[in-house]
Amino acid sequence: MPSADLKRKLKQQKDFPETLAVRLHRAISWLKCAEENTSNHDLQFIALWVSYNACYAIDEKLEPDFTERKQFNEFIARLVSHDHENRFYNLLWQKYSGPVRLIIENHFLYKPFWDAQRGEKVNWKKLFEKSNEDALRYLSQVEISKLIDVILDRLYMLRNQIMHGGATYKSKVNRAQVKDACNILKLLIPIIVDIMMDNKEEDWGEIYFPVVGQN
Image 1 (cartoon, rainbow, N blue to C red):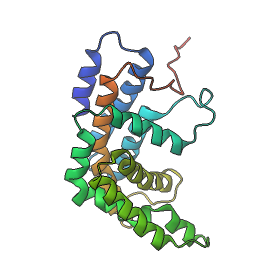
Image 2: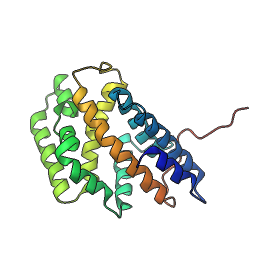
Image 3: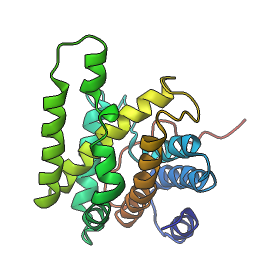
Image 4: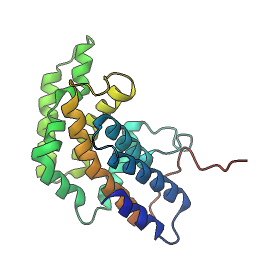
């Protein structure tokens, strides 16, 4: 579902929680930004990640024990529990031989690989092979939350590389993973936003930066 359709659907909602409306409005705006930058995969990835971040980020003061990893896991688990049409599964099943598999099997997106490059004694190859095997098992056993966790774990590594200055703009070195990341995020995020919109009674948390009027 494109951002324009999601925006239209959001405007048609009645008795909609203000905090959730702000959250989704922000997510949709960055999804639109990604749609406008299809020829620039670096900017598209950044916009898509901000859109995703807008969906799940919460006020840390209200949830002080939440690490970002824990936020990921609990957020995805709630989304999947509300996915009565199995949209996540259908998407990942259809794309597993494409961008999903390529993301999972790219060792440059696997944190232990980089830990080993920094001198840590870790058998990253063995861990990487097991992670890939686990991902395939999650798909075959319809453990969608766990599969999405693996995918987001890889994408979070890419996010860190780009956002912390660990990658060159329009670099040929990481073109494959950036393109693959965009290909899966641009399909995942509309599902996430739509499910959240359809489940307004769910507590999706307080936003970290509420809207404050100008004086």
